[in-house]
Image 1: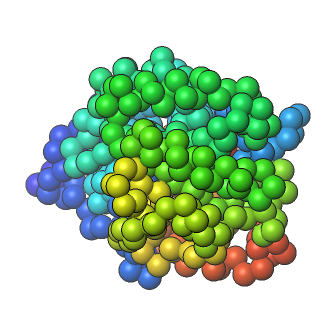
Image 2: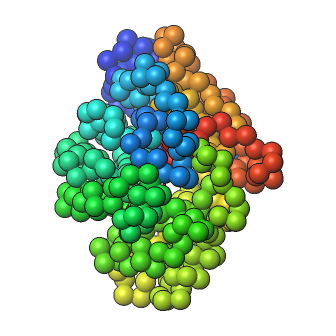
Length: 354
Ligand code: SAM
Ligand code: SF4
């Protein structure tokens, strides 16, 4: 019998339902962690320059455009990953809305049989103008990064005087019904930790889920310092000083410990990779904009999928490469040991895809 394969319009692959041999064994690493979600970076470029992400001005080297995966290539690799049990895609970057006609890719991905959800993380600069097309293409949720509600401070943190436009983007996403709608905030000591309660209030007024993320040593400027990390414990104390927090727990494979409020309005999630890592049931993998497979944010190794893809590898061969790399997924943050001394990050956050 002929072996069904996967992919869009390519002789080596099919775009049909995932049946027979096309449904491969799940992607499981040697610690028993099963991959269910992939974060796909669409570009390393960004129109912002957040100080916890991007190298300083003049020190950024963007990938040449021909090195980025085409939409055909992103779709093909996604189909292979879905055949191995991946169920959710999050499009990220750099800034994913910088990719022209990104809604076309969203439409193609949402039509992949077996894929349950396509979401996006964005800085929202282009969200107001894109929200309707993204919704029409089938995008589920949007997570918008918002690190300050003060215009001058937002400018200082993001390197762009963008707060009004970001707020418009959030409203547009709400109007269009992009769900779940979340706001991400990286809390950094000395920059914005005094705004924790303001951000909580902002999210509660709009019934939006807010996520605080601990600052990770993935910044392009090498300024990360444990002293700058506002811990989940600290965040809980700050929020708890005004509200009674009701624990909602952390779902399997989820990054955020979630907390509700007595009046049921809004939700806050604390993502604590540094002080309370959640690597034991991690179900995420990553694909960079130039087709490098990353098993963990804190993996030292990037595994090239673009070269075999462009050299004509079959879906089966790509799947086997992914499986072999995934098996060696490192245990997680704890593997870094002394973060400051021993770890050499492969790339900064904008080039990995957060
Ligand atoms: N440009 C989009 C945005 O800002 O939402 C998507 C890419 S960005 C790299 C994805 C997420 O990573 C954002 O929420 C951002 O705040 C977060 N991030 C970037 N650098 C980080 C760091 N060093 N530590 C923790 N989170 C970081
Ligand atoms: Fe750009 Fe997002 Fe990085 Fe900020 S966090 S510089 S918006 S990629």
